[in-house]
Length: 122
Image 1 (tube, helix red, strand yellow):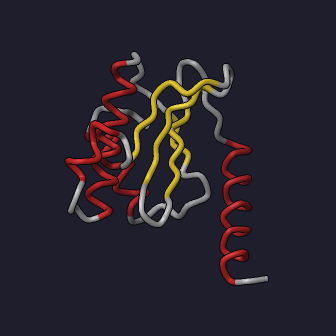
Image 2 (tube, helix red, strand yellow):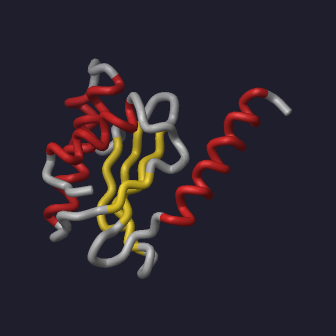
Image 3 (cartoon, one colour):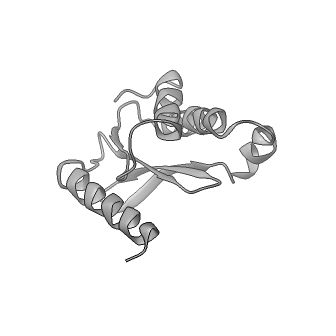
């Protein structure tokens, strides 16, 4: 097994362990984060309906140009603020944070802090 496959398997084990306990409802949906090498994605998901209520990423057309040239952690913080704004427009103030198996530091932490700054409660 290659080192990349071992890392991916470890993240998938953490993801399954977290997902057993964390699920989104209509009143308190799940804020799910995915981090790739170059970008970060955030979705607010109602697991009961199986519907995405809000989604923002570093590739979103309204954010993409304003994030150009910023460090990745700062871009993640701004994505967090944008997803909080989108969730509030959808009438949501409280969410459950799902780090999706990623460790809570760096860009994941920056995104969650940005979402809190934007007014989301979790």
